[in-house]
Length: 352
Image (cartoon, rainbow, N blue to C red; front, top):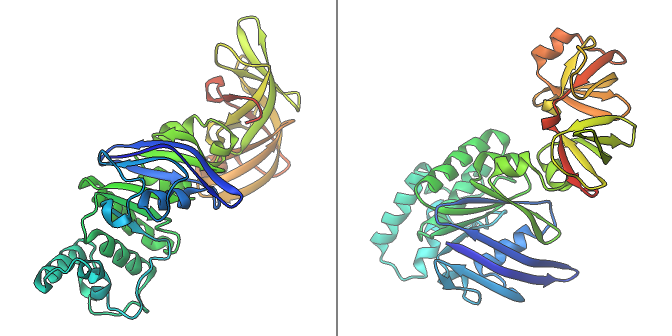
């Protein structure tokens, strides 16, 4: 469906460089990155709003690198919606159809059909100044989809929508994708990527640094940057060494971790998910991997329950369900035991 071949584009001091992506028809691809990472610039290149300095853009087997947006069968929804305030909802949706000199009855039919699909038939006669963020998003989607593009490009589609309305928009996007529409969705929100993407690409400083199904990318992050997107907060610089038949990792704080694997470089970074750490209020039996005593430094509510900050020579962040927190009766400054299996530790070469 979409193929980007070695795309590069210089924009002032910033540059997209060596971008290679293949997205099959019917895929929901989320491009995840911080502000200034190059994700919107890449979307504009795909849409045809700008031209790459080098590389090729192929859509449906055709080289469209230098073609205009109207010749690409692509629909683009801007972050700010770009809705015309002096038009009704009907006028906004119908606007792209007028340029094709379509007959009036055909325009009415197409607008009514897409308005019903977007669940906005009841507001077609309203002007847009007083619409909610969710309604504006649906109008923008309807205006883009009325021409039946094969590829839908979304630039931060939920950035201006109240949290209570996001689930409705997600359901709409999933429905469009299930009906065969290929979607490329740009966002900085990890949770959007996880809840929508069939495939995710993480972009940083103009480069795609990791790509794949979201469960694989975020369970096996390639570096610290990707791990932070997955909500991982436990990072440890270590030196790797072998003790008899087992690999170990020595932290700066002199803790020694047991890790799984066959070979490691001299130094690297360990990553540990907060929900892979178990807490105990008494010393566990001997022979358990990665068992350390620590002191509870902070207790804070989190979206998962409670986040416990523990000093065990290194700082550990632990996510704990509320029921487990209550049963352990954890208090700040109290002693606690932490343990985690060696298979839970992700080892990366270098500094991450």
